[in-house]
Figure 1: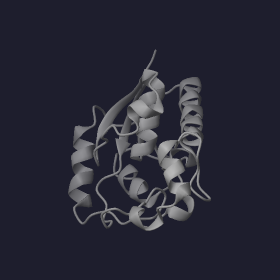
Figure 2: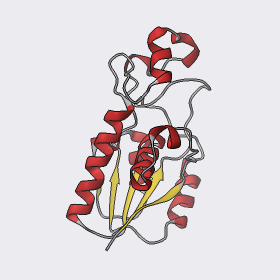
Figure 3: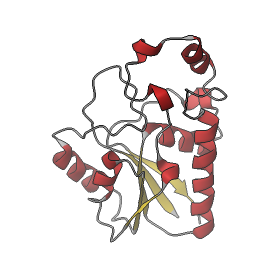
Figure 4: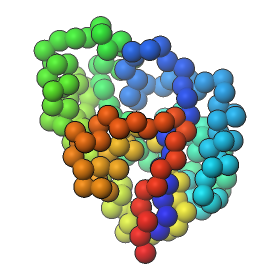
Amino acid sequence: MNVVLIRHTRIVAPPGVCFGRSDVPLAATFPDEAEDVRARLPWVPAEVWSSPAPRCRALADRLGAARVRLDPRLQELNFGAWEGRRWDDFRSPESEAWALDPWNQRPPGGESAAELWARVDALRADLLTRGGDRIAIVTHAGVIRAWRGLTAGKSLREVWSEPVEFGGILGGIHAA
């Protein structure tokens, strides 16, 4: 099985804004960026799976597969009440507790990193069970970090700040 993970292309969002699951627009350069991603794929995908977020679906639709499968497990971390707000505007004991322990703490109305990892792990297990080849997954940086951590046996702390470029393509599963 060959799987590649692809982060959506660049977005338009003010600096310092929390936008996990918020619907943020794609940059005006999207058509060129999408073509660049497609040209850099190692193969034409037989299947494309995507986060339901419009910024991911738009790219997924351009990758050449006959059908795009939307899966909510590919959504970015849910920041709940912090979505769409500037990080500096909601400093509180609650946000500080989350910053110190995102694995166990949740933003108000959101999810913990442990919950994100659990849903990504469930998706990985489903893909391994069902098989298939040449699967492209269009998703978000948090999901890609979780996938990489799970695959490499790394902790959250080890992968939390790893860079994941907009339009980046990373290998996912390579199994028989």
